[in-house]
Image (cartoon, rainbow, N blue to C red; front, side):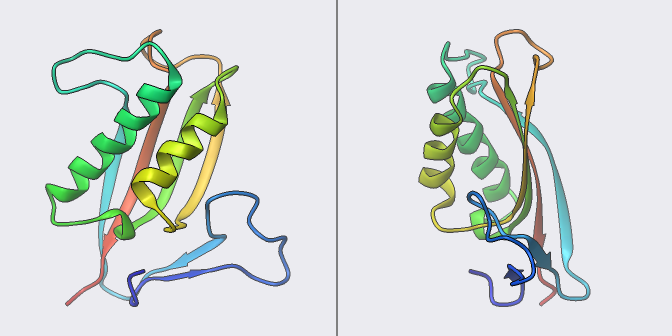
Length: 133
Protein backbone atom coordinates (compact mmCIF):
# COMPACT_ATOMS: atom_id res chain seq x y z
CA UNK A 1 0.00 0.00 0.00
CA UNK A 2 1.04 3.58 -0.55
CA UNK A 3 1.54 5.05 2.95
CA UNK A 4 0.52 8.56 1.84
CA UNK A 5 -2.85 7.45 0.45
CA UNK A 6 -5.27 6.28 3.15
CA UNK A 7 -7.71 3.44 2.40
CA UNK A 8 -10.25 2.89 5.15
CA UNK A 9 -13.46 1.19 6.19
CA UNK A 10 -15.61 2.63 8.94
CA UNK A 11 -17.18 0.60 11.74
CA UNK A 12 -20.47 2.45 11.25
CA UNK A 13 -20.85 0.99 7.75
CA UNK A 14 -21.02 -2.69 6.81
CA UNK A 15 -17.67 -4.28 5.92
CA UNK A 16 -16.88 -4.16 2.19
CA UNK A 17 -18.89 -6.73 0.26
CA UNK A 18 -16.11 -7.20 -2.28
CA UNK A 19 -12.63 -6.15 -3.30
CA UNK A 20 -12.81 -2.49 -2.29
CA UNK A 21 -12.46 0.09 0.48
CA UNK A 22 -15.28 2.44 1.47
CA UNK A 23 -13.09 5.55 1.59
CA UNK A 24 -9.85 6.76 0.05
CA UNK A 25 -8.24 9.94 1.39
CA UNK A 26 -5.56 11.67 -0.66
CA UNK A 27 -2.85 13.92 0.73
CA UNK A 28 -2.88 17.59 -0.27
CA UNK A 29 -1.26 18.19 -3.63
CA UNK A 30 -1.66 14.64 -4.94
CA UNK A 31 -1.51 14.43 -8.72
CA UNK A 32 -4.63 12.73 -10.16
CA UNK A 33 -4.80 10.61 -13.32
CA UNK A 34 -8.26 10.08 -14.81
CA UNK A 35 -8.08 6.92 -16.89
CA UNK A 36 -10.64 6.34 -19.62
CA UNK A 37 -12.59 3.11 -19.69
CA UNK A 38 -10.38 0.21 -20.69
CA UNK A 39 -11.95 -2.65 -22.65
CA UNK A 40 -10.74 -6.11 -23.62
CA UNK A 41 -9.16 -5.04 -26.91
CA UNK A 42 -5.62 -6.32 -27.46
CA UNK A 43 -2.88 -4.18 -29.03
CA UNK A 44 -3.49 -5.94 -32.37
CA UNK A 45 -7.18 -4.92 -32.25
CA UNK A 46 -8.52 -8.40 -31.51
CA UNK A 47 -11.04 -9.18 -28.76
CA UNK A 48 -11.51 -12.50 -26.96
CA UNK A 49 -15.04 -13.88 -27.20
CA UNK A 50 -15.57 -14.59 -23.48
CA UNK A 51 -15.58 -12.53 -20.31
CA UNK A 52 -12.56 -14.33 -18.83
CA UNK A 53 -10.17 -13.27 -21.61
CA UNK A 54 -11.66 -9.79 -21.86
CA UNK A 55 -11.38 -9.22 -18.11
CA UNK A 56 -7.72 -10.27 -18.21
CA UNK A 57 -7.08 -7.86 -21.09
CA UNK A 58 -8.91 -4.99 -19.40
CA UNK A 59 -6.65 -5.16 -16.35
CA UNK A 60 -3.54 -5.71 -18.49
CA UNK A 61 -4.47 -2.56 -20.45
CA UNK A 62 -5.13 -0.62 -17.25
CA UNK A 63 -1.74 -1.56 -15.79
CA UNK A 64 -0.02 -0.67 -19.08
CA UNK A 65 -1.58 2.81 -18.94
CA UNK A 66 -0.46 3.21 -15.32
CA UNK A 67 3.08 2.00 -16.07
CA UNK A 68 3.37 4.50 -18.91
CA UNK A 69 3.04 7.20 -16.24
CA UNK A 70 5.35 5.51 -13.70
CA UNK A 71 2.38 4.34 -11.64
CA UNK A 72 1.36 0.92 -10.37
CA UNK A 73 -1.81 -0.79 -9.16
CA UNK A 74 -1.32 0.68 -5.67
CA UNK A 75 -1.84 4.15 -7.15
CA UNK A 76 -5.44 3.32 -8.15
CA UNK A 77 -7.80 5.11 -5.78
CA UNK A 78 -11.13 4.52 -7.61
CA UNK A 79 -12.39 1.91 -10.07
CA UNK A 80 -15.69 1.87 -11.90
CA UNK A 81 -16.57 -1.41 -13.57
CA UNK A 82 -19.25 -1.82 -16.21
CA UNK A 83 -20.11 -5.44 -16.99
CA UNK A 84 -22.70 -6.65 -19.46
CA UNK A 85 -25.65 -8.30 -17.72
CA UNK A 86 -25.48 -12.08 -17.73
CA UNK A 87 -21.68 -12.22 -17.52
CA UNK A 88 -19.96 -14.00 -14.62
CA UNK A 89 -18.69 -11.51 -12.06
CA UNK A 90 -16.38 -14.26 -10.75
CA UNK A 91 -14.24 -14.13 -13.90
CA UNK A 92 -13.88 -10.38 -13.45
CA UNK A 93 -12.94 -10.81 -9.77
CA UNK A 94 -10.29 -13.39 -10.69
CA UNK A 95 -8.66 -11.02 -13.20
CA UNK A 96 -8.85 -8.16 -10.72
CA UNK A 97 -7.14 -10.26 -8.03
CA UNK A 98 -4.44 -11.34 -10.50
CA UNK A 99 -3.58 -7.75 -11.47
CA UNK A 100 -4.41 -5.78 -8.31
CA UNK A 101 -3.62 -8.38 -5.67
CA UNK A 102 -4.64 -7.26 -2.20
CA UNK A 103 -5.06 -3.61 -3.24
CA UNK A 104 -8.59 -2.37 -2.42
CA UNK A 105 -9.43 1.01 -4.02
CA UNK A 106 -12.88 2.57 -3.72
CA UNK A 107 -14.97 0.76 -6.34
CA UNK A 108 -18.33 0.64 -8.05
CA UNK A 109 -19.61 -2.20 -10.24
CA UNK A 110 -22.60 -1.75 -12.53
CA UNK A 111 -24.36 -4.27 -14.75
CA UNK A 112 -25.35 -2.72 -18.08
CA UNK A 113 -27.35 -4.00 -21.05
CA UNK A 114 -24.42 -3.44 -23.45
CA UNK A 115 -21.28 -1.41 -24.03
CA UNK A 116 -20.31 0.81 -26.99
CA UNK A 117 -19.29 -2.17 -29.15
CA UNK A 118 -21.46 -5.29 -29.03
CA UNK A 119 -18.48 -7.65 -28.59
CA UNK A 120 -17.25 -5.85 -25.45
CA UNK A 121 -18.35 -7.50 -22.21
CA UNK A 122 -16.55 -5.40 -19.58
CA UNK A 123 -15.11 -1.91 -19.26
CA UNK A 124 -13.14 -0.49 -16.35
CA UNK A 125 -12.30 3.17 -15.75
CA UNK A 126 -10.00 4.34 -12.99
CA UNK A 127 -8.66 7.26 -11.05
CA UNK A 128 -5.07 6.97 -9.89
CA UNK A 129 -3.11 9.30 -7.63
CA UNK A 130 0.53 10.11 -7.12
CA UNK A 131 1.26 11.79 -3.79
CA UNK A 132 3.27 15.01 -4.02
CA UNK A 133 6.96 14.41 -3.36
